[in-house]
Each structure stands twice: as structure tokens, then as C-alpha cells.
Length: 292
Image (cartoon, rainbow, N blue to C red):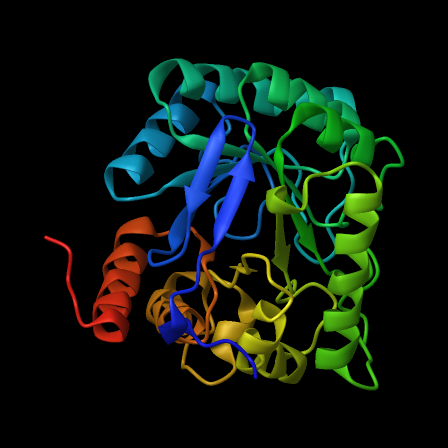
């Protein structure tokens, strides 16, 4: 039988400095793009001081994790040299770690960037290639003791949205995630450090995205925390009247609520407060108790 959110089974996610208990309360991961070209906020937080101030604001609004990224992975995005990526993210992570004890995630597929980020204070490695993009990444992840997010992506950001095709998107993504758990563990990564992400919008059509979200509890049956990153993505304009990025907030909040009811435990978002309030209300309904 597939697990449901109501079962409240123990769900722990280990990272470099401790453990996040996701058994009853989901974690909101605030997105901090220190890039000039991210699809929704490119350039706004390019300065390290401004970026840190924004991260502190997200923490005040309820973010349990801050996900720092120095390379855009939007469809068609060009790759960034690892030296440039390090120069973008490390000053922000150092400043944020000095200012807060929040859990910090580094959004990168490069081992050198991940290593530099962990040395600067990052706790989690969020890799859109599921440790496959750089052969050195599994070693960095295992030796650091960092949490890892293994995400499914079909193709590369430059080409992933060019008519993506699957015979069985739910089955194929689920099997990929299962195999990558095994590969991570075989590389020496503690299975308790692993979280999974079906990769909404990464090489998927709107229909693929819909089917993956609907199958959230199927992916939860793999036994590791499920991360959903849907905030501001074009998929949200599929059913809602939200052609512009700025119009997609409430469709994203609705999807977060549904994802939590189906068992997802981490939500990667731009607008922290609305998602925190919505997910806590969802959990109060699921559990019958509201924390004051």
C-alpha cells in the first residue's frame, strides 16, 4: 500500500550539521538566485549583501532552508564556468552562515562548486543532474556528509524542453530515482542524506508535469523525502490564467498544498510566506492540530 500524508511516519533528512525532522512538518526552501539570468528574478540578488538580506527576510518569513544557486537552469540557459559560479555563491554563503544558523543548500551540478560551498558553510547539495553531471560529485557529497537532492532531468537545460517524450513518465522517473538512490549509496553517501525531486519542468511537457504531481505519493513510496520545485514555472499557466511569472503565485501555492497532502515534504519556492502559511494550514487539517 502506498503511504499517505496522514500516516505521519518518521521522515528524517540528514545534512552536514544535523537532521531535519520532516515527519509532521514540511520544510520550505527559499530560492536565492545569485545569477544575472534566472527566469524569474535574474539579477535582483546578484550582489552578495543584497542576496544575504533577501535570504534573512525569507528566513524571517519561515524558510527552513535557503537554496543558493549561481547558474541558471532555466530552459535554454547557457552553462557557467565553475570559477565564475564559485565567485557568485561563496561570498553569499559565507555572509549568510555568519548571520544565521539556517540550513543552506547549494544548487549546483559541479563538484568544485559544491566543495567550495560546503567549505563556506553549505549543508546540502542540490544537484539537478542527480550526481551524474560531474564524476567527482559523488565523492564530494559522500566525504562532506552533506545532504543531497537527486533530481530527474531529461536532457540538458539547453535542450530539455525540445519535445520531451516518455512512454510512461511516472514509471520512468520513479525508476530513475530508485536507481540513483542505489548509485548514491554505492558511492558512500548515507541513505539518510538523500532526498528526491521528480524535476517538474525539467524535460517535461505540461501533461508530464501534471501526471508527476498527481503521482507524488508514488515517489514518496521510495522512502526518502520528496522535494517539489514548482514555484513560478510556466506549468502554472497551464490551468490558471497566469501567462506572466508575476501571476503564478496562487497557482503555485495551491500546488504546494496538494503536494503536501500527497506526501511531499520539501517545497522550493520564491515567495516564502504564502507557501509557509498554506502548508501549515494543510498540515493542521491533516493532523487535526494547529501549532500556536
